[in-house]
Length: 257
Image: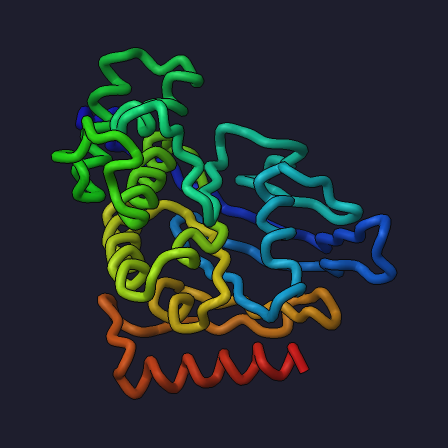
């Protein structure tokens, strides 16, 4: 890739007293959340069902409006969707009538990126996720894991300031999800993209994150933030890894109770 294309943008995300209450609910889903994600940091959100993980991500994406507080990206308040944020959901959202490389190019095409740049960037990120040789395959010809890698390549081509990921590997089998989180860690180390990652898997959060944020379904607040000071690549059976996983899992279970 050219020097201009290889330059990465990083953004600092700040949530200040962030609240969200739905009209049909008696209590707030999120209640005065204070959280800062530093530029280039990988932060995972975990918590029991109903704690507001996906709601928080949707607020940062601009897909929903908060009922209180602020969301700032590099000091600029978020008021709606924007090109400075790219979202990757559990469902890959690929278009079955397009082949792999055209799916990767799709967002760039909508954004008006020149065709030569589309091709260069699509090939670069397909190579990064080890799919370049499958670039001309139809979506129905590739596996579920390969579809998620295609979706990841598409997200990376947008060069947004922050990548928002909502349980992107949860629908996959254990072996495939383990392989994809290894690839995601490698790609994050190469790009140093700011990532906010939602997961129900404590093991996945300890494997990927610089910090793990535990949300409470009872109070709708941050109940703890755990820094993961383990060298990468991480080994899930190391005593240090197991200890951190157990500690966070106990906190999640305690909040659920």
